[in-house]
Amino acid sequence: MNDTAPPKVLLVDDEAALREPLAEYLTRQGFLVTAAASAAEARSRLKEDKPHIVLLDIMMPGEDGLSLCRHLVESRDIPVIFLTARAEATDRIVGLEIGADDYVTKPFEPRELVARIRSVLRRASRTSAPTGENELFEFESWCLDPLKRRLTDKDGAVVAISSVEFRLLLAFLEHPRQVLDRDRLLDMVQGREAHLFDRAVDNQVSRLRRKIEVDSRNPQLIQTVWGGGYMLAADVKRVAADAD
Image (tube, rainbow, N blue to C red; front, side, top):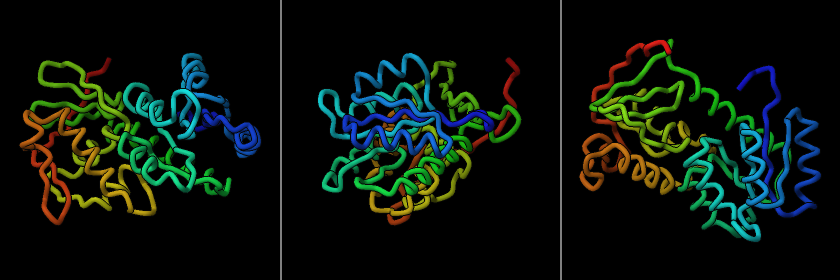
């Protein structure tokens, strides 16, 4: 993201009474806001431009926010913050498990939402930047290019990973053979103040294992440390990338 350009926000909510004043407030806070009243309209907007972040209501007629979120984190690599009603605890957990970056419960304080947006954008900016000068991570038969967010196997084939899976893998690669507990992983990957959703970390680790392990039911790369968390049990080599 260009530091001099305003961050682009896609706001998706079917309630005009919330969507319109919130769009105006975010615009006053320096964001470039595009609003959509449904998932279908959001998908149309996404064909025209790629936002830096999506604010997404869960309960909408037609395609719901969970389905759209799954599409965004698996294929578009766009951070997502859910806007959700207080009664939807299960939906919040599911949302975090499928890769949402954060959630805000309705009714919310707009200043809190702005703070969370900026926090998520800072994390996305940090993990989209290379850790060194065109530096790659090589481990076992895998290679991760942090700048391009591209994971390749030993044959050079690209394996698709979501935004959260990318940040999770990067956290492990930056701390190889170190035990990372769930609270620390939540802070590094999702940056949430409350650590109430440990299961979200477990599910993301499970998803990542299915991508990189020979047998995800008997993981050798990302090992569970009982009572402690998880550890990347592999040596990691940082190498300079070839210039394109």
